[in-house]
Image (cartoon, rainbow, N blue to C red):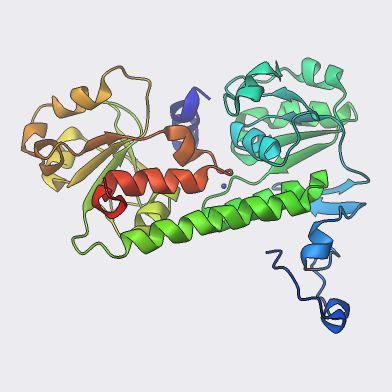
Length: 326
């Protein structure tokens, strides 16, 4: 994963992130409902790790955690961000080569990127390896080798929207004995999402937006049924790309669509904003005329973890700066 682009292009070309406090009333505590995982649904249950716990991973394997893992390997930046947010710095012994947040992740032993080092992971003897569904196309054989060596592997679902991201955080919290921390993260994210939606829904002049995730000549953009489409829907903006999934689009078509805002979701090209503005014919686009070609942090908008709500806010500010007093 060379930041977001490598993961994106591999995925695109191969196919492309609660505990409401109960009252003090004892009768209500006795009537607290039970979840599918056998946990009471309430703050008291969230504050206690329920072990053993059996969870079904993204490939349908039922994984039983007898106790909270003491050593963890994370194979995807989004997993790593969740694990650190849950307070598992000490337990994390290995991370993906591209993990760069939080700063503590840079100090951890690296296990490789899309092509990971099976022998190194096994030698670490982790209690669990948190893999990721998006890496199965190239890594399933290596994951099986890790399983065959007696190391527990939990494949995290490739979340495609906010609700699935919340579920992922909740699930990793259950697996690691950090249910209360997971609940706090989710509630904080939901609060930020609600704040952004409240601000943007007051905007009267809705804008047409083009989002690109790679530079010319192979310009890729998200269309319907993508994470970025959900983000645009949440802030009431129109996506100029109407095709399904991630599509390659020509510069001529972008000019023809004439977006009000162009969002650049990558950083591997130096001076990319000026480069976009100087493409043939782009001088006629409203976004270029009004200096609304804006680069956003691809890590915030592509990693389905605790910072995803901040990614929503960053996109919202790019599209509707006036709603945020900017």
